[in-house]
Length: 156
Image (cartoon, rainbow, N blue to C red; front, top):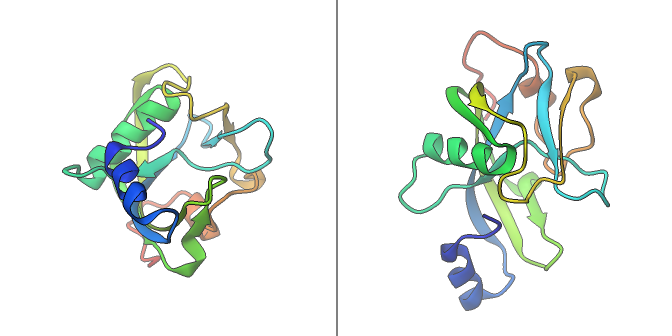
C-alpha cells in the first residue's frame, strides 16, 4: 500500500511539513548471504531495503512482516533487532514534497515462503546483492548493519 489512510488524513491537515515517521526495515539474506534490496523506480539508481511505515495498532515486528510481504511477496519471520536509527540524517523528501524524518527499527529476517515479486507495485525491481556491492541507498544506514552478526548490535 503506497500510503495509508492515516498518513493521507495527516497530510490533508499539515500538508508537506516535516513529520516523524515510525518505520521498519528488513535485512533479508539468501542462502549465499546476499541481501535483498528493492528499487522503487527503474528511472532511478537509488535502492532501499524492504521497508515502510508502522501502522496504527501494529507492533514493529508485525509491520516488518507486512511490509516485506507487500514489497517482495516473501513471508518472513523477524529474528532480531539489528538497530534503531533516526535523527536529521534520516530525513527524506518524497517527489511530491512530503517531508519525513524516519525513526527506523531494523530487523534481520528469515524467509519462510513466497515468490520474489512486488505485491503492491512499490518495487520496480528486486535483487539480492553481495555485501561488498550494495547499491546506492536512499537512507544512510551504517555500513556495519549489512555484515552478519551472531549477537544484538548496539548501533543507536
